[in-house]
Length: 220
Image 1 (tube, one colour):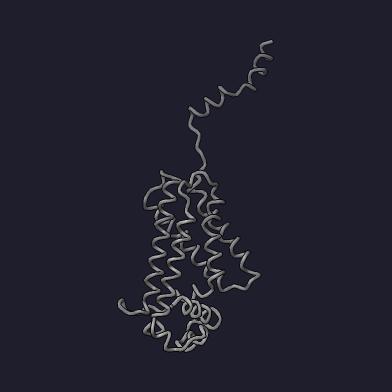
Image 2 (cartoon, rainbow, N blue to C red):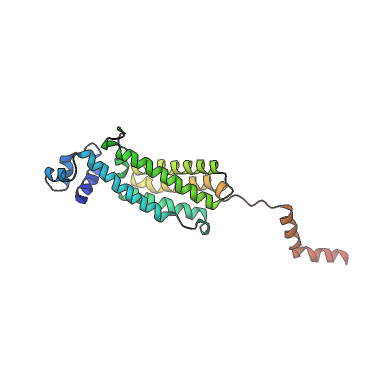
């Protein structure tokens, strides 16, 4: 079965989703068309199984990418830790974008399986960002935090999808742009500037020994 899924992914990556017929997949897998029907009733079932495999791999990436303690990492490194594995996954699985771009069908239709999985993956990713942002800035209001997580996830999804369609020379610049955009968007809310109180200012003044020689010099 895995051989057939590998063959389907290759056909989709090389020729497009519409070219991934049962005949083309069996030919790429170097097996008889009847062998495919032993595992899958039709071509849409193959795509649904491939989407499920991609979803499992993507969930594993999410598990590894999100740190248990987000406080020890600077924001730029935290963004890299999440974005880079996702970009690498897109690079090594060129059929991923096309499989999850399938047309939505009725709820009980096999064709709608990739669409449902795509929505589940996205919602799960937003949930993880929400938890991460709460840990980074506990003072951030719940509604604001959820909106920021949604915007960040949408930015990442859109630019990674665009990067997947780009020529090789554009891939790195697009990834760098995504990292810069996310840093500029998230830094004000996840690394807000520290506002000093009057007590802090007085404490700083008391602790400043550089003023003493000047005062003593005037008394002399």
